[in-house]
Image 1 (cartoon, rainbow, N blue to C red):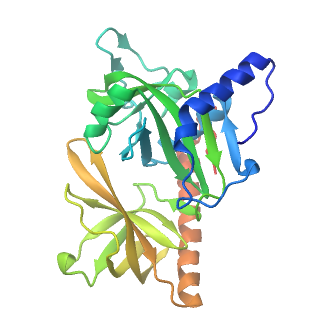
Image 2: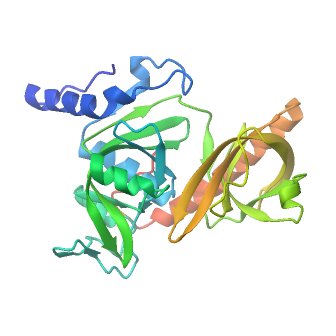
Amino acid sequence: MAKFVKQDDDDGNQKNKNLYKDFFFHKEIKAQQARELADEDIEILSNVEDIIPYLQTALLEEHLIEVDIGQLTRDFFTQITDDEPNGNGIDTGQKFLRLAGDQETGGYLKNSDFFLTSPLSPGMGNVSIRHYKSAILKYFTGTTSIELGCTLRQAVNAADKPCLMFDFPKVGRVLKGFRSFRVKVLSSVDAKVNILGHEQFSVRQDFQLEDISVSGVGFMVPGDIPPFEIGEKFKVRVSVEGCGHFEMNGVIRRVVPLRSGTSFNHICGMQFDLETGAMAKTVELMVTAVQRLHLREIAEKISGMSGVKIIR
């Protein structure tokens, strides 16, 4: 098990160890999910100032969050949300709570009191989280997996939208070298995936590119019915404005449901069939170009905001 940084008092250090055990010991990494991690590959998060940047990153980069509830084997999904710019606050049913810094994206996170997420998908997760209360919220950035131990406070309304309020995480961990580097594509970037050679999509349709790595892409397909089955093979065309395009064969490796308001979407992950070194180089150049766009937009998004650090 990874080591904790020595704190000012032994009681505080022991409390952090107990929290870590409560959240993570029954959810240890499966062999098929990652290579065997050494102690130095696991960074423990137990201080507010260490955890805040990861929540800010998840919000600003619009990450899909995987929610691991209690002893359940099924995973659910959500996204961290923010109040609308004009800020209607949060109706808890008991009092009207005004978000601090509601003119600043994610300003309320700096209070390290709570954070908000959209309702879980599939919907049965919203019942389960009310029963178990505790969950591990997980997302990926770069080559690492970020896992935060969280406790549900209550279901609330923020800006007239239903959401879940979690207590601010007291413990988490960063698993390094967890997967190949993926670049998140923000929704404001015109980046598309077209399905080629698939009978269901004989008419050209554009789907939003979510992320890209040297080994594959993730893209969003609207609809409450899964569009593909794991293992399906076909060709896609990936195009990003200002970065060019390429066509590549691949196989579907994941299909994740995600609720957005009253509608459903599916995040589909495809692994490329890189037959030659030239193909691999083409994808690598695209990843580099998309990363430049991503970093430029994030820099513009947080310009003028204080106390925000995006995790890489």
